[in-house]
Amino acid sequence: MQLVCPNCFSSQLTKEGWDKDRQRYGCKKCRYKTIHPLQPDDVEIIQSNVKLAKQKQSIQDLNRIERKTFREYARVENAIAEYTKHLKEIFDKYKLNTLTKSHKQTTKSVGVIQFSDVHFNELVDLQHNKYDFSVASKRCKSFVKRAIMYFKSQSITNVLLVQSGDLLNSDRRLDELLSMATNRAKATFLAVDIFQQVILELNEHFNLSVASVTGNESRVKDNWGWSTMLTSDNYDYTIFQTLRYIFKNSNVNFIDGDPTELVVEVAGQNLLILHGNGAIKGGLDKSVTQLMGRYKARGIGIDYVIFGHVHSARVGDNFSRSSSMVGANDYSEKALNLAGRASQNCYIFYDNGNRDGVKIDLQNYDDDMYDIDKSLEAYNAKSHDKVSTGTTIFKVVV
Image (cartoon, rainbow, N blue to C red; front, side, top):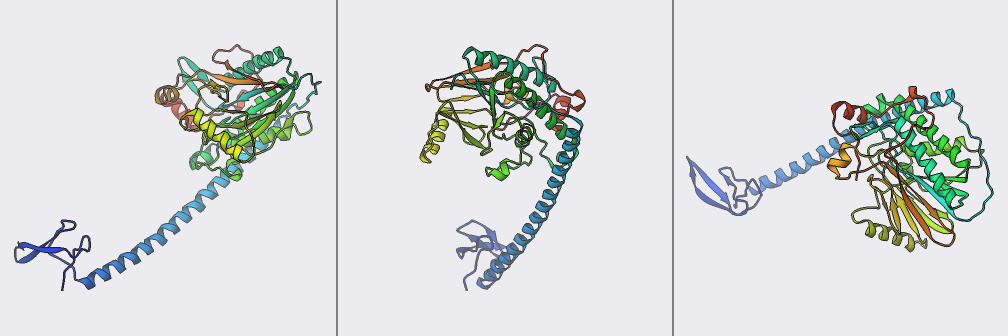
């Protein structure tokens, strides 16, 4: 009867001398040495036992994963419920102004002001750059003032305000989700309050529409999905829908649609809005061309694409990428090699098919700011840790 290698179950065993009083065998296939070769019947029994053991272990693993998933789901749901409760308590204490105006349209051209990667609840404490809610409020105020000047120089009467994601940072670890619920509720309210003031100031001069897509840093859960259900589980989506509810009886138009990619017609041109963490990869020109091709295959021609995500500005012929309101931090400079300044983009789409785009530098600012209740200032757990340890202030996921 031919013996079998216990390592690889090959029958290519040869005798290779003796080990004391036992015959030693060597396997030609795997070069394993043994004094305990298997009988062919043993192999069948071992393989059957291994198969049963794998099946048993698989069932145990599935049960363990299922139990863990249910526990994590319950904790996330509890955290969201706690966040919602705190948010409602805060809103009940404040009355936000929603008095808006309607303006006579004098041109079909449209101005677009893009707020991207604002990261309201980030803390940055570098020698050459500081960031907190107060700085964010001042930079937002400066951005709006300069955008108004830009739009008025071209006699614009209709403006689209775009939120292109990462307005807040989320605490996605389960322990942070539970412990930081109050902080996230405060940060959400302050973000809504600042944008409410932005909307009112813009509406003093222009007919206003608002459109929004969600970012990756503001997602509630750690996993990222592309379905509408998953991507709407996001603080950016909460901020937009809250503003929409606040201004429901106003002259401000809120544009609903896919929270990941949104096409809006401005002055007869199709503008595609997204955050930039999914479809934009590697070479920008190639990514944008492929993105436009995907829409063209569905019968939708895209004239221009705007996005953000990597905190570095670029204004091009077919697309523009906005930087962040935050500016430089350790991670962007040392890990990504991006020496970023705080800036945002705005554009004018003309009714003759032309379009302009400008980057507005916001690194330096004056003391004029939107009102904020400083008692509500709250920052995500990651910011606290990184300011106190002197390491990276915030993480950009590329």
